[in-house]
Length: 109
Image (cartoon, rainbow, N blue to C red; front, side, top):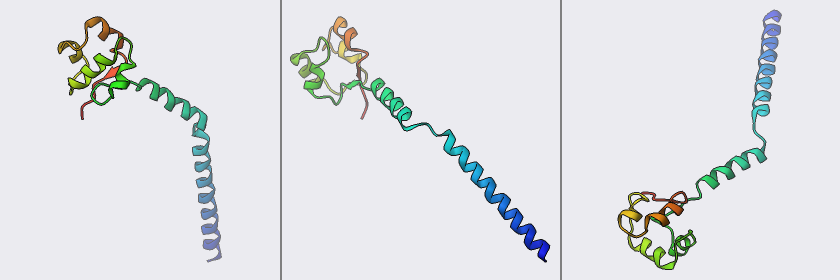
């Protein structure tokens, strides 16, 4: 009986020690907070496109080649299935569209 208690205690000790080592590995694999923030900021910069279906005319007017009148026309022409509809609906010329096409997106609601 004493052997069983000793064996059980030894087994319990070994298992608890193994669990402690496993948790130590997880802590070592975590990224530092600064590194995580910088990757989130990079992702945000990539997604900083202006949605032509929801942006205000003031936000649209900040795009190169888009003034107040074109911004109002973009808002009036909503909704857009794709950003290329700005040219198809003759709201923008091809040269102006080429300047802003990488800065805009047409999200669907």
